Image (cartoon, rainbow, N blue to C red; front, side, top):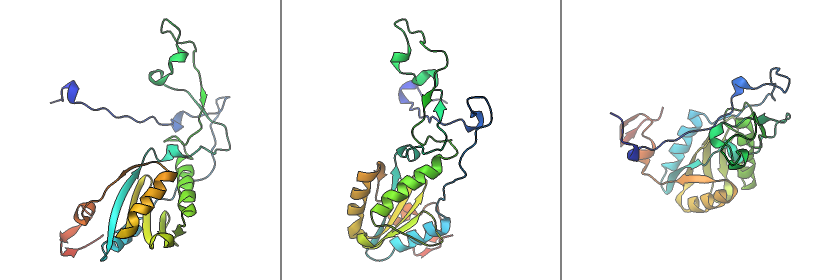
Length: 209
């Protein structure tokens, strides 16, 4: 049974239609050969284990509109057509009729769906982390340690962050990172809540897989 309208909450996402992309002459669009390198489950398990040590804790967080926080530094200028629902009022006349037939605008940010969006978003984030003193963990992409923040360890998967290490350094870390990128949520749950996606035999006999 559907909810009554007053109890409904709708959420949507605007994406780049890569399958509909082409050149100004209608030919197939070509992009740079680049891709993102998200963290592995092995790295995530190690970060969680590190956070379970005495005096340590784990704080997850989400980045707001992750890819869109980076510029689309594509070699080819990219333009897009907007759906009528998001046209600005200036694109309509006083009678509500469209002033333009098929207007296009320049795409400046890394919009979800663009073949290069993930790579540009990842590079933007990594540069901000390196500026904070991050040290890459060899062989494990999107995994870092921070000697200047009590050797905290961070793993990143697209727009999800897992930070673990000395409890006394977490607030300072998130405060500084929030000045560089938009962080949507930082929360502190008990470690039993955080590891729910993983396999557990019982709380005293933890098995990470």
